[in-house]
Image (cartoon, rainbow, N blue to C red; front, side, top):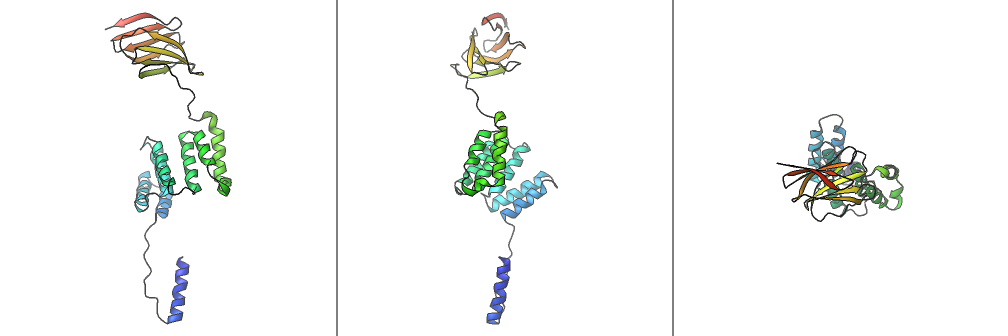
Length: 245
């Protein structure tokens, strides 16, 4: 556009014989340029300098998509934030005003990949329609989501059966069983692969605060609000020893 403006100034001078009266405006940095500078700095300078540039970009343009994405990712990867869903929320806020923009879905898909939620990454990337869906980077992200799907963070089972809040849980050494303690004074042994309750241990007179399993998962131990520690035989669900004091 500067080239067009310069040409128009020349035409104005030729047509009128006078110099175009308005001075060329001094244009400051844009959110795009600040974001590009920040990304370039990541390998050259402390990350704080890049973060400052993203802050400036977001002051100029609060919903600047690339700055939100890059800044959020760096804050998360460097442990400055521990809420990965916060990045998703910010990008979805931008999505409200840019519903037809494939870039929003693409970056959201990358965030879900980063979070290990490959199911959601696939669904988000498949939400890109038309010719944009065929773009190389979109297809590459989809392929990555599909490849990592078997190891994706996703809900496998819900373990239901306690009648009061659950205070503690542990896994057996081989990962086959889980033991949970509840404020309802009970312990429950679960089969991890199916989510099925195998055993219920009753004996505490106050809520269970902590639980543990032996290496062979034949014995369990629990600590209760009744000031007791109980040792259980898993097969019989029987308390074999109580330590008080």
